[in-house]
Amino acid sequence: MFAFYLFRLRRASPVEIFHRLWDQVLYRLIRIAPALFRNFFQAPAVSLDTLKSLHLPDLVGDIPFEVISALLAGEVFSLNQDPKEIAAFEAERRGVFFTVAGPRHPDPDIRAVWEPARLQHLTLLLVHLRRSPDGERAAEIAAFVRKKLFEWLNAHPFLQGPHYLSAMECALRIPVFLLALKTLPRLTSGETRRLWQVLFEHGWLIEHRMSLGSSLGNHTVTEAVGLIMAGIVFEQSRKGRQWLKRGLELLKQESLHQILEDGGPAEQSLGYHRFVLDLCEYALDFLEARGLVRCPDFRDRLARAEAFWSAFDFSNECRPAIGDSDDGQAIAPGLGPASSGRKFAPVWPREVEALRFLESGYTIFRGPNRLHLVFDHGPLGMAPLYNHGHADALSVTLAVNGLPFFVDPGTYRYNGRPAERVFFKGTRAHNTVLIDGRDQARQVTGFIWDRPYQARAVEWGGGDAPLAVLAAHDGYARGREPVIHARLIFFPRPDVIMVRDTFSGQGRHVFEAHFHLHPAVRVDQAHGWTILTHNKTRVFVKFVDAEPRIWRGSRDPWLGWFSPAYGRIQETTVLQVTRQGQPHEARFTTVICLDQAAAAGERP
Image (cartoon, rainbow, N blue to C red):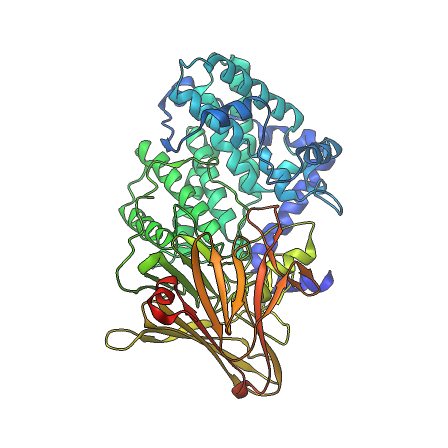
């Protein structure tokens, strides 16, 4: 534990350290003598004219009737964890001051505990009510939302329980409170004042628990949006103006920091990229409707980010699970800002083409038969902690005809399953080469990395030469016997992919190349070829240098697992080839023939 705190201190600035220490002193004083701080949390008066002048951004997305019925029947979002376990944990922590209300082993995953407390199930009902204010179930929906909203507030008073641990979680509730104020009919003056007060309390806590310094990330963007929305509500007060100014500064800063020039994510996570884009677009819609800002440069950056996002789509909004994902939604499941730009339909060229994102570190090959191959030659994540990156340098994913074959296994869970967490974020869980059983970087905690690698594309092909990219990383260059791993991907023909791994360095090592398959893929072997079948699409793979070993559902070592959604895990098949020896002696050559190549006479 001492080593961890020393590690964190080395990556924090003096200003950040002072800020965190001061806040800890403040929370301790509030806990000891809450009456002395009551005026700190007292919301300034807000006129009804302010409420009327607020224009909430339009949201797009269908809300099926069966979803409405399920929500009215009591369904909540719990990330595949038992809602009864979550309710029991909340009841146990009720009345406990928030700084000591966090989970301990074997408590439920705190991320799953927080999910229903985002109240996004109420967002879906409120948006439906706004769209159909005179619908046949409108009165029932309004009564249900009012009841559940105030029940939640009564059960979780300010600074009591686990739902005030995270400023990000507080920020995600602010749009729900505003939506309720603008949508619920016949709120009493007491209910309206209660919601104003809750909004102010959430804004206060966000201000004092922001993710700054070494903790910058998608949490910071979320908190900035929360400050902006609370600041606009209380704009007539000094505190509200401070929040609005601070939120705008942080949103502008982090939009440039976290969305790279080529539109990709600094955090190296597709899931959080979507989350950040939705938050930024929702906040801009909110600000522009208020006439506070016009951000053409910001909009241009977001357009590039949307184009980047769309490039990873291989079938009807299906994408590889690159980096961490907790399945979190900025607004609510199925809903997004109207300005979102999700209008980029994939275009499948007749010949193989390469989309190159140099700053983010990805090359995406697209071609006939809806070939979609992603080659990751980007960094570990966002410095200095690299929280949501995975050690996946030079990994590939492959889809054909809209069906995934080589996959990134996903995330599974953040908390409560340490062995699984180590596996899913580690190098063995990705379609790249593991050397001596070590990750490409060092895992410090379930989120934090140390000794990050550098990865980059070093050579391109195309034109008269075969379409190709060569990339390398130095994740195994530390230590007394360093090794550099290079991977070449090229297309001698549009229906044939060659993957060649080479190594340079010193010493004797064990080299393991892995190819993780989607659980729906069937594996057969014939005449030296491994035949992969997904529905009626087949892909033929030849491992030139060694026979593949097939793994499935192993826990020693962890291998052969897939997480289709947060909190869910299932067995899958992994193809592994292994070599031992000096780096210059080790080489992997993998030939991948698409189905049309086999039909044209290349069938093994």
